[in-house]
Length: 250
Image 1 (spheres, rainbow, N blue to C red):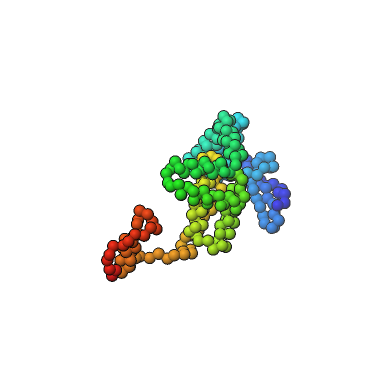
Image 2: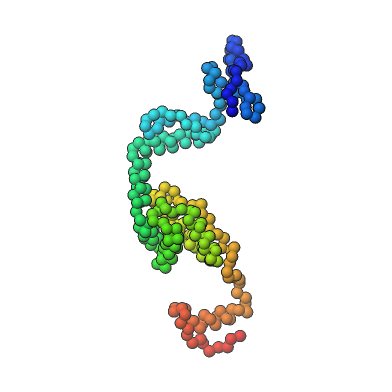
């Protein structure tokens, strides 16, 4: 944009009337532009439709910031949050959090995985479920070469998912593995080991997109086969057949 042209007053001071000055010029598109300027003729005047907050920052300096909202109640909450954050930083609360995140980032990834699996144990569930969850997390870790939690990246996860799909892995299997690794990173963020969850944007595929086995309702004429199979198998010891009762199969 070219520099403003000569300033021309559009009103004059007469009684209660206030003189208003405008800068007028032609831009690069040959379009006429006009903006009001202050009494010095050097600064444009803009009307901000957002509330401006005047707060004291962490260095005890008074600053003004736009709240980017036209709602007074919302603007007051935003200003209050800024003041609270400034006091937290001043009192060392924020610094303590930064130091804690740095300590966690320096630990080997395996230590965080151990802690996560131990956390799952406190919530119940089975040992087999925890072992399966760990295998899933280890699979993504080995595929991407992660060494610490700050290495965890959504692109690495997407790349490994693409590799599994190329190998014709079942979508339900991929979904289960993603559930495990996403639960891990969610735990890292919620327990302040990471600032944010790096996999929050990863979406699990639809398990119905390539279902391997179509399920349906058991037909009435098929019930006797189910009954025979159940009677022929010792339910308390799966896989160990027992002698079925003498009866005819209809």
